[in-house]
Image: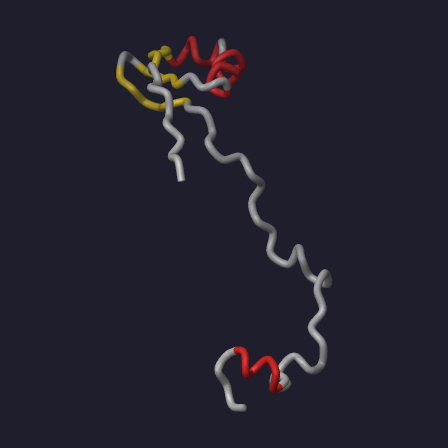
Amino acid sequence: MAEKKKKPQVRESVALYDAKTNLSALVDAAAAGAEFIITKSGKPRARLVPLDDVRPLRVPGRGRGKSHLGPDIDAPLPAAVLEGFGGPK
């Protein structure tokens, strides 16, 4: 299986004031693959990066009622099927 190679990211430093002023543009650029380091008083404080996985969270019970198990679910398998598994003949 081939691994996905990430392109090297150039991280641009952005002052907190500038990040607040241009947040929408920075988010659009991050969604396109750019990474930004947000600084406060010249010190790095946060990193704005693109999301890798944006699938919605799994919701338990979502498949409820979509499948049915018959009343004989725990009944012994037929002899012909058991023979295929090397069972008693």
